[in-house]
Structures are given as structure tokens and as C-alpha cells.
Image (cartoon, rainbow, N blue to C red; front, top):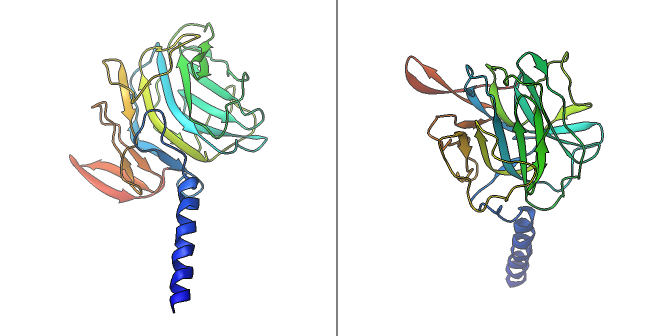
Length: 259
């Protein structure tokens, strides 16, 4: 009996360090993080992010961490909104890619550059000025665009998962598959916050008058809802859980955001 108790205690003693190593350290912003995998492959807003706005400028940024990049011939969506913009990680090269749909013009897909390092937290940025640019850890840039504004979109904003793209527009080569890794501190702003070189943010992202949405992902493990701290009400929900406004009241229903 004593030996069995000793064996059980030793087993759990060894298991705890192994379990703790499965999680990455906190991001430079601190606090919690969002885990994405095959089971919980995306979170999304219920309503479209500012559906009636045609943004002249836009910035989407996040901290990401992954152990292995997507497989060759596939790519992960980090953040995107169908018909408006997207930031992805491409398996062919392990680099970032960005696209945006401009008013009256087809924005080019921006890709290539330095592969995103694995096994560490990386600050990734997509900037839009009717075209698309991308960067990480303080270096990147936006290419000169054709003018105009990013077009309207009545689709939800998604973090991870699969964001449909118009097949008639320029698009990434390969299959859009579920992001696998960790994401922290996502902010969307109606301004180009960064140029070709920038100082990587320290601590949590801040709210200002140009902030459209901001998520810290500090909720308890297993949470289905993630609060938008910008005050604009664009909370995120895990796939399989929706929040809908019915007759002026907030009701919870179940379903899939995938189509």
C-alpha cells in the first residue's frame, strides 16, 4: 500500500512539470492568452466590425506563439474579416502575408520576407492604406497603394479559423486551415500605427481614440466569451457559441459560425 502511494505521488510529481511545459510563458504583454487548436479553432465577433465604414487606414496587431508553422501548401489566418482584410502565416515559407480589398481597386497580397520564428512570442502587424503591408518585431512596412479606402464588410471578424476569400480577387495559394498556437493582445485601429520601423509595444496594448477593438484574453481557462475592452462592444466568442440580440435582450444560443 505504501509503495503504491509512493508510486502515485511520484507519477503526479513528474506529470506536473511536463504539463507546465506544454504552455508557453506569458507574452510580453503579460496576463492570459488564447489557445487555438483543432477543437477550438477560432473566435469571432457576432456582428460585423464597423460594417458601414470604408477605412482609409487600418492596423491589426497581435502577439502570436507557435511551435510549428502550418504545413506546406496551407496557411493560417491570424486575424481577418471576409471581404475587407486579412493577416496570415504561410506554410510554404513560414512568413507573414497580408491582403486588403480597396475601393475601386484590387489590393495586392503582400508576402515573403523573414520567416516568423517559432517557439517564441512575436509581435505581428498588418497595416492598410487601401493596400496591405505586414511586419513583425519592429520591422515591416506598407507598400504604396492605389488610393481609395478598404471596402465595407458585413461579415464577422475572426481570430484564427478559416476566413473565406473572394475567388475572383488575388488570394493566397494553398488551403486555409485552423491556426494552431497561442495568441495574445489583439488590437484593431483606424490608423496606420507603424511605419517601416517601430518600437515594439511594452505591456498591454493601450486604448485611445483610434482604437476600434481590443482584446486582452485574460479570461479564465475554458471561457467562451472574450471581452472587447475598447468599449465598442465587439466581444469575441468561441466557435460553437454565439451571442445574439433578440428583441433588445442578449440571449445565448448555440450554433456554428462556419458556413
